[in-house]
Structures are given as C-alpha cells and as structure tokens.
Image (tube, rainbow, N blue to C red):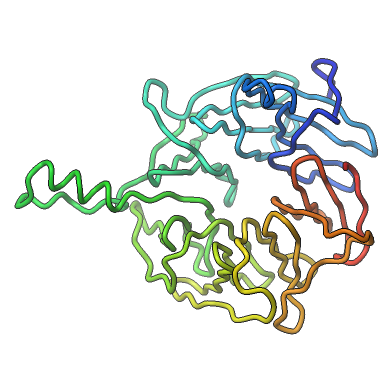
Length: 317
C-alpha cells in the first residue's frame, strides 16, 4: 500500500483502529493542526513494522473504521459523522453517502458482522451495505405505530421524548443482530424488524464485546457493565471504582478489559484492576481493538500494543 501524500504521524489524532496482523495496523485519524483550525480532515494511516504512512484522506470528520478482506486484497471503509463513507480498495480511493440528499447522523460506529457492514448512530439510524454497495436503511420496529387518537403536536412530542440512538452492535448467542444505546436501550433484529429487549438499566450503553463462549458484555455510564445471553441481560457486579464512565470494552486472552478514557482496567477475580503498562503513570484509553492474537489500547496520540495483556509496547506517544 502506497503513501498518498506527505504527513507526520505526530500530527495524527487517532479515532479508530483495526489489526491486520503482527505489527500491522490501520488507523482512522484526524490532523491535529486541522482540528485546531476547525477544519476536519480524516486520515487513513498505516503502521507496518515500525513505519508509518498515509494511505488516504477525506475532508470530513471520521468516527469509525472497518476492514473487509476481498479477493483482490483488503478494503478499508471509514465512516463520517454525517453519513459519508470513504473507501480504499486496490489503491483506489472513493466516497459515497449512506443516503444522498437526506440529513442523517450523527453516526457512532461502523462494524462488520458476519460479513455484512453496518453503520449506526443517533436517532436509531442503522444501515447495511448490500452486495451492490448500496446502503439500505433498517429501522422498522424502532418506532411504534402512531396513535390516531393523538393530535399531530401530541404525536411529535411523544416521538421526541422517545428519540434514542445506537452506539454499538453485535450478535447474541442465538445469532441475532443486537443494538445498544441511549438510556440503556437494547434491541434485537428479528426477521425484518427491531424488537425491544428488557434492559436492567436506563444508563447509556457505549460498547459491546463477545467472550469466547458467545456471551456478550456491554459497558456504559456510571460504571455500568451488563452480561447478556440472547434476550436475558443482567448487571455485572465487581469490586473497584463504581462510577467510572466506561467507553470501550474488549474480551482478550480470556479476560474482560474496559476503558474509561483515563485508564484501562481488567477484570481479575471479580475486581476491576488498573492495567500495568510498565510505566509509572496511568495510561489513558478510549478505544480497544483485538485480532490476530493482539490487542491495541488507544487514546488520542497514544497507542499501546500487547500480545498477552501483561507485557505492553508503546508504538505511539
């Protein structure tokens, strides 16, 4: 993969990351100088055995990154806050919008689930990309049928009061696509529509991960951790600080890791302990990613890598 233009990784503020192999990572990032000027320019940045290069860039705010292996190579997709999707495949850079002419977003994430790419965000907007590269909106079930007994103003007031958003998606133990979001909302996509699942909390859910046995774990505000098996969800009790706002969660090497922006913690004997990165200060973490026997912990201009959760290497920061 070739560098598209000169850049300095010291200017890159990391947003999301995917692991392609040992010492081979691709990041969605922003230019720090651009952010200072109020001008967003998202970057697709590669790290390969200690070398950094810029693969592509687009003039908008990036929120997420996903990769998809193809017969001709790997396709990289970057999601913009307002529904833009920038792609790089076979050295060709392109850009589309999930729904041209329609204001959407702000979007929260982009995830490949069982070979299908999903974009999701506020107002419970969920789209999937079909084999022809068209984006299809799937929101049936998120809103109940309007009550004809209510006036238009009353219906609008009720609708505004129930507006939510999807911050994370995953598949549950029965293979159903499941969404998590605002005010503790949990949804399952059954046949062709979303169905609400009873949630044990009304706190915002931010991220989800799947354990080796298929169990889903979800993290959220005020120290919230949930464990789910299909449509049954329960809080996870643990020792340690109880009111941290968790923003990322990852199952790795047989253990559960959670990040609160200011630190990374691991569950050991029902206690959330601060991860020892081998340095004196506590290392901040906002984003976690795991694949190919590695996990990355990331926050802004800091990126750390581990193969076992015990020994860490800083590759940026």
